[in-house]
Image (cartoon, rainbow, N blue to C red; front, side, top):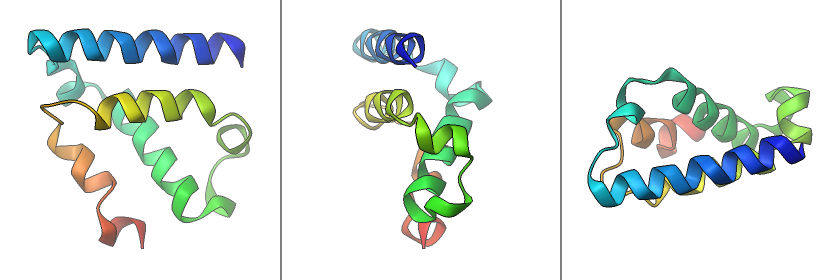
Length: 88
């Protein structure tokens, strides 16, 4: 879990730096970011349906999601993952 948290903190710093430089293209094409966001939204909406590993160790994903939500140029898919109709 410590390695995952440190990795997520590094990822959030990289996202912030790339956002300042205007280069967040990798968020649009990488499915891993979307997977992290979808698992987080599932665990918020229906904790019983999220994977056990994710429920027990959700802190790293929180760091990554918060970094993505703070971006100036958020990817379009981020709005669909956290859309009210998708969560409810």
